[in-house]
Image 1 (spheres, one colour):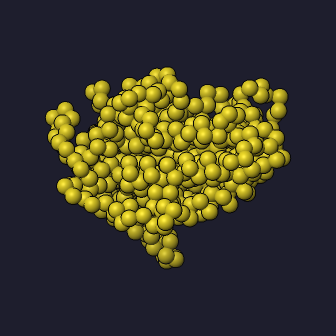
Image 2: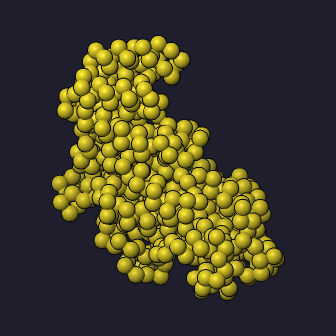
Length: 513
């Protein structure tokens, strides 16, 4: 976990006077080995919201991916020893560097086959780990060669478990029998289940969900997570088991904060109850903009690459954790690290966090980096994976198109405009809350705004009529200034009306809500 983001920022900027002991050594020649997980999102987001302990299982699965990544990196170091060391590990990926080694391909190939077999057996292929390597002789990270090797490797996922020397293995490698299996109430998968009691609830859970529940409890007790060897630990890889401890052999950067309800992790129903007005959750997906381009600009400079990767991972883990603990205690982090973040919490607090994190991230990166965000509204028992996909679509299909934007409540808004629009929405909600603006007026404006987006030029005269007829005093003057002259808020009037509706206890009629 990065404690001093200014150190990483300085390294990214190329300040060579920094103490070199802070940065792992990159030799003049050797082998670079990259590891990358596939299937992370589907695996992490599988827990069912209505089931008991879903928040703990989400936290556990997110941590499990980070832990498996770090353990896989340690296995690579072990196979290529002596002289191999970890350069960085973040967000389901790692980079290990080794001194020149004549048989590195054979060693990594053997490890890849073992990982394929383990993941197919333990996780039924839901998680897939890829290892790729490339030699270098110029003291720089072989970026292009690693990219080509990784792309080639990803064409044959789990091949080490599916093929043998004589070709494809037996059919049981491709299909699981399902004999005696039932639907797990924790994750919805078909598996061997057993009855488990958690407080007053009895559920049918698979072994993975039982392990995740216990792992989630341990993570709550250890704000700074590390892995230590243990015969009965909840995390395993290739025959070795590991437990969570305050100190251990391998440190794992995590967002430790979790909302509580009477000393226990709050469930999604309890989080929704903390929302202003309508009891909805907000699902927020955040992703840094043009990060691939930023890494390419470094042209394999190991020192500066370390700086950028550690700046990003520290920002999206340690810095987010600090912001949640100090200002946004009702928000739950599903995962954060690398260059992305996924949060769930009361819808209005999620929007407030997004604005606060924008300012913090720009400060951490010295105004050099930006991010985009997408938010989806959800009732507390809607499936996590479905609403996550909706938030991801808001991010990728809308906010990422212009970049440096947020997509929320039906509109895509540039960050440069969001603070003013958000303040205007809160003022509108206050006018609505005091009865100075009625719900019918909000719905009429949403309709007219939709007509405006369809090219209907009559919206202006109709809106003028609605304002004159339905508003008076302060509300009338503010609405004219906001939407008619100079109309600085009209472009985003729809999202502002929806915000005001959500702040009310009345059931919104707008299908976008």
